[in-house]
Image 1 (cartoon, rainbow, N blue to C red):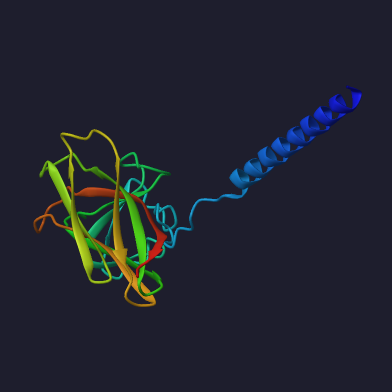
Image 2: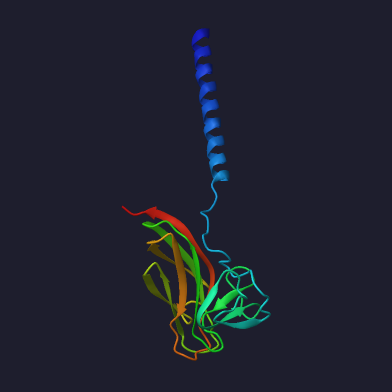
Length: 197
């Protein structure tokens, strides 16, 4: 009888030890799992010359760190509007617009990448529906933000497959020429997806 109890106690101790070790491993995995690396630099536009309330930036401007303006103008927003994250964001229609911004980064050909970004609207003028195009590696998609339907920032995602070892991600306003009130852009990220077969 005593031997049977000892065996039961031994197996119970083993079970408790194994369960404890498993819990510690799960905890360590959670602590060590970090979010995927953002391949975009200054995706929330916090780095750069202080725009004050806002500053209008055109082609060739170096005031928004790591980003190039390649068409028209954009407004670099400081305190003028509440941004999605931090204190700065971009109105894709400058004063006046529309504009285009882009950034080039390293990629692996044949690999999918996930683009995530936040949109809102400059509601101080028309149109009610703000539109912009996202493009990379010869692929593109148009996105719309209805300023009447959504009253605050909304996250969007898009996926592309890299063709070269360097890829340019671009955001282009689809507003009419001379418009001042565009889509607001913030929190841009590009993360690694899966390799295509």
